[in-house]
Image (cartoon, rainbow, N blue to C red; front, side, top):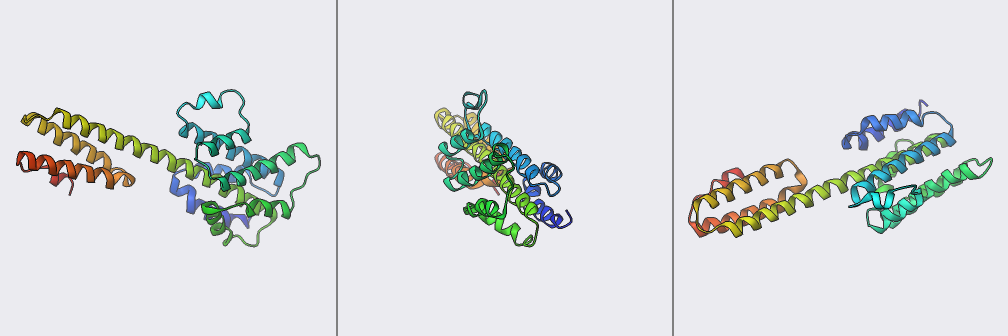
Length: 247
């Protein structure tokens, strides 16, 4: 247990703390504590499947239509792959965890060996492999149980990161669509009246304010605002207070 504390610290600092879910990660550490590999695999698999379900609930427009009733782990992986939120390589890795879990559940006397572990980590690719390699460097001489714990913990955190990023991307797209619709309505409304020009400035200032709250949403919306601002400024020959708002 003492050796794994290094792994716990590195994983917490590199991912869980950044994403804002340190409490969940510490719970994972507690739930998989010890050298019982059966417990580590079964509980780790539960964490991964729960995260996968949450990911699908974020990604799908009507998750209840696909996830109602009993949806098995493999089916969830197929859905995630089919809608493009999980790469082919990542799906293969998460299938490996499911295979380990099934081996314990359906093969009497199954014992996870180094060869089983190697097949799991050898399936890692892309960003998942990068994350695991980063953590592995700090935990190179651990027991098999601890190595399994680190691998499955890395997979769970990686899946949570994918879900987090996808959620932010959806929010970005929604805000961009909202800004586009606002711009469209303003263009349709403006007919030379000062009232509509003031409304235009107010609306774009509000969008800009929202935009500054998220680093991911800054460039495209501000460029659109500046283009429209320049257009109406030239059309009406007016000094625009929006330039100050964008500084």
